[in-house]
Image 1: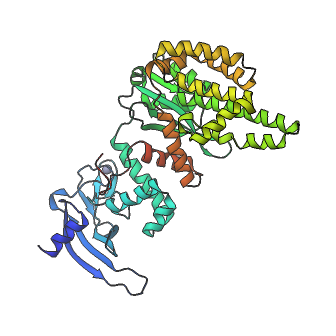
Image 2: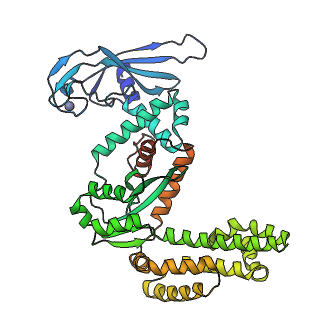
Length: 421
Ligand SMILES: [Zn+2]
């Protein structure tokens, strides 16, 4: 096998690329890595397409002559592809550098290299990717934008939606939010934009179009009026569900409020030791029963002796959680019982919660009836939170949206070592 044939296979360059020659540039300093410089060209029949739109276009000029693209490392050496970059005259874009099969338009990286960079930026963060490949943070950021833009231009995520969840996600301290829409069946994020207002929800329905909005059968969201009013207007036939995740988080909030109240009461009445014990219970109380260890369960049972009010609050939270797992008729009866019990509980946060649940009862029953309780919103929220933490926050909402789409819309580049989807 000829050396150039081996090289072409090793570099994964594909049938549209011809390797003309190659050169190994030895490192000069101890710290420097050797550089494999590979001169390539596009196969004759494939030339003459606009780099922006791919339209076949007539030759224009030689452009700026030769260009180079960083490619995937070869062992210990870095790799560079070098080629002529002539321009064509596109009908739409005017004189534009011709498309090359190994790189995206306007990138100093090959496609394969860029895909690796973006993959690392998604699973870790942009800084980690920058360090791993010895490129700048800005270069990583640009690669993410390029890859996301290309992928979103190729697929229509809003096609065929039947059930969606609309939710808000914090991107920065101080009430800065994004609105995120996901497909309840695939779990994919399909749309995201800055802000949490009626106008933003309206933008989603604009993007969807009236025909596809009419085809929406279910929309789940929390109790937010800024979502509900727009949904009622733009997708009047959709059944509005209240995501289980939100109802449960209301209940855990109420439980925590009871715990804080009891803690304060004990502190004021001089029971410092008992108060301290309650403070430490926070984490335990908020966890689901099935996730507690034997010892932790004993602590909850102990509450019967230590603090009945807190035990009652905990029971109300757990019972509400169970209701979402019941068949509709049983759930309706259980919800009646729960509301009666909560209203009479003399626990102010739960009395208030009972009122809220009564107000949203039809949406809650719709959720139970149609089993849209698969925690999609919850898992997306957790994953989006992870992205935000890994990046140590996002200043630019657009950058956050790009990362959310890359990770949660299923458009992240497929890397060679990834298992087949
Ligand atoms: Zn063009």
